[in-house]
Amino acid sequence: MTSGERIASDMTVFLSGGCKNGKSTLAEQTAVYLSRPGQLYYLATMIPHDEEDRSRIARHVASRSGLGFQTIECGLGLEAALQDADVEGTYLLDSVTALLSNEMFRPDGSIDLTAPERVARELTALARRMKSMVFVSDYIYSDAMIYGDLTEQYRRGLAHIDRSLAAVCDAVAEVSFGGRIVYKGELPV
Image (cartoon, rainbow, N blue to C red; front, side):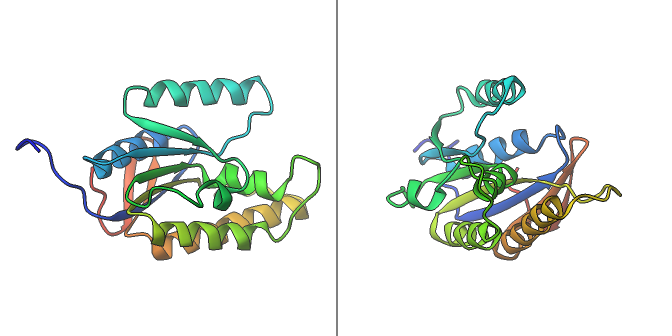
């Protein structure tokens, strides 16, 4: 190891914020920092449904190219996908929002209302098991819209998962307009 390198300590980070506010960029920087000198994994949860999704995925892939991420596609079945995972690695899960959507609104058209509790359990267990984890979630709670029952169940489910992760993570921050508000701990970058 050269004098400029450092060994990252174990850390879990939860980042939330609005769409296109810099969450993914901050999450990538944080994961890269925490990974030194170890392996870096990107847990890709978005399942593309249209051209806009494919374009967004392409932008995310381009933004992290050259950073050393090994991508693990896990839009469904996260627990099974990571059963034999490298617990000493650093993982970036982007995003909790997409993961819950995939698990709750299944590809076969069925709806799994137990998904929020299961996903919360799986993600908090993952946060405790892995050396370092960075979770990204979308803040979808600040509008005054009245939604249908199913959408409200999804929003409440995501809020439950977000609170569960915030409770177990070392650092919790909101990303807003490129800035950050730290609610718990300290961000390493």
